[in-house]
Image (spheres, helix red, strand yellow):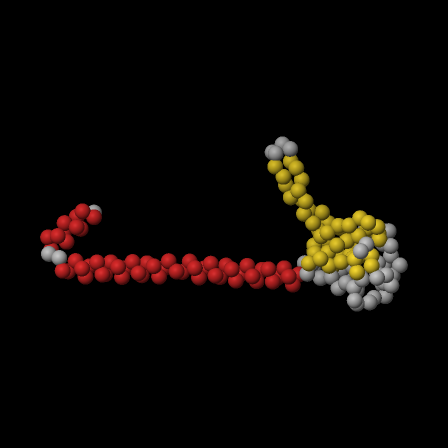
Length: 166
């Protein structure tokens, strides 16, 4: 068992996979990629993807393109869909797999926590939007108090004030 692969500590869980860079015989090269797991298969495979910018010279703009890669998913890492992972290049494992997952960078739980926090913030902003409604009730109370003060004045002055306002 290797304690470190490319300065990354081995996971605590052990496995018997011969294609695991930590517990098996698989050598890794110093070519690393970072991506999000979008698909996971039963046969210890996964698909990761990442977004990249591509220049369109005609329009002087950039478009977003995505790259996908099939990787080996060792059972000791327990990678789930939605997690951000670090992948290293290896010898060809199968027809389409030339890379293996070596570290989980960001779990899907932290992504859901961020979503929950943003939901709480949006609820707080809706609460602050309801406060101006209270101000409108205060304005109507002020109008009522003005009408009460108008009762003390003679009718001629009140009529003149109303015509001036229009």
